[in-house]
Length: 215
Image (tube, rainbow, N blue to C red):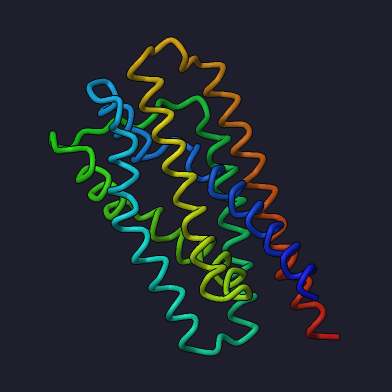
């Protein structure tokens, strides 16, 4: 029983890492501000990730404790899986459709990277929407492994942000030539595939639960 639980936990963490990376690799406000700041500071990625964590960690723990305080009916959990799965598929499709469009440009005031990370995260509606759907579905799964399991999940999720933005900032600071259109396109197609694949998995699992409950 214990071995099976540990095995399930490792599988869950692997899925968290893949889903988290697929989200952070997509071009967005934080990615844009990282590029803007990295041209002047090679540690901009670390500072932006810390600013992002300043907003994200309280939100993650708030969702966890709210879910722990109340008994969530199965149909609500299923609904979250359906909505989260559909959202991931939609994000994948939209990303593919917008693949030839220029990346968004950061046009905010000149502030330190840390505060830029806070401001950009808090002002991004897609970030809130992600945590209310996809993120909540992941937290519901993390609850199975208790508070320690959830804390590991939270740290792993943010570590993906930290590693990615730190790497991007360092590479851009050192040399722009490494960030070629071919590399960017390969990463984008990877993200599309992961988003649609995991979205279908979330949606299919929720749909199977609905069918099972009927029978």
